[in-house]
Length: 408
Image 1 (tube, rainbow, N blue to C red):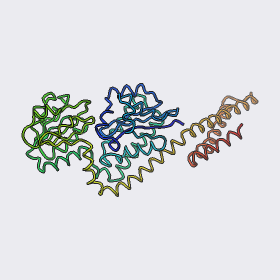
Image 2 (image 1 turned 30 degrees about the vertical axis):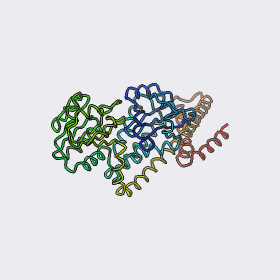
Image 3 (image 1 turned 30 degrees about the horizontal axis):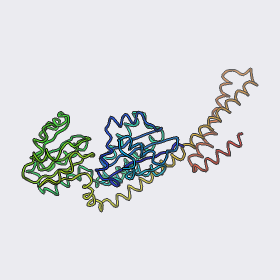
Image 4 (image 1 turned 45 degrees about the vertical axis):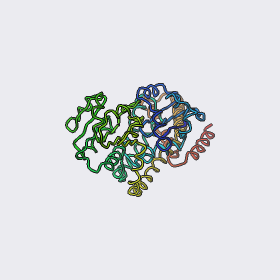
């Protein structure tokens, strides 16, 4: 059986100062998936987690996957191995189902992680990095999550990271109507952030590394060229950073030089962080990174208890369905081998019969061959595939062993 493994770190086991060291640029991710050293590989990288999923015909050595990840980003296993969790077999299925459903997120039940997993799966699949095992695992997780969102109200009560950021803004400034907000980064998170901000103020500025991305929203905000960000960042009451970058795009010294004398709130949704953490040491500046938004999550938990119970039930059904398939995978291969053996035997017996009846018309010979073939298919259906569907893998294995002994 091809075994499945995973290794990763998240907001639960490592703070952002550690997680940002394991940021993987898209070009490195693509190259890694194309040149994968494992039979199957999928990489999930978000602001709150970096996880590698592997399916392998050989058994991975202890620490092998974590060492591989550390080597990929140029970090020492001895320094960061402690921050990783490692799982294999059934535990991988439990983990990915919980992650995909948003039950392992900062904001429990949030929707964004489903889109991120969908993209991670599509990328790996299109690059030929996944196979039967990871395809089934992630397809099952995505399907189960969609069931949860359809059959429960969990997502209606959930809050994604931009939602949490908006709550933080409203806690700091009761009234945004006469205050200005500057968003840097207009990807998926930045665009969602913009939707929330629009509900409270029209004084909005935004930058993107590609200026045309900011210009697309010119009807609701003032586009600012990325290189001119310091002309605006110090004058705005709220700065929201959500750009994908490896190095900080807002430094302490340049920000300090641009600041006006009033209260400022900087919310950094980047991972790695978009701003230097020391920004928060400046007078009249409040700096909030992704990890600190966890404090806001607690307010919504009480309302979601009932919906969580319903979601957990659906989740368990999805897990059990996948594990049944996973355990049956090798059994299914053996059954197909046995079914093909039955078809060959039927073909051999029909040929023997036809050799003893040389004067038969061609049409009659074909009828006899078809009858043997149909009989073999019926036997396979009745005594192989139905046995697989209604029994445990262990019982099916014993049945196949008995069948092989009889046929031999």
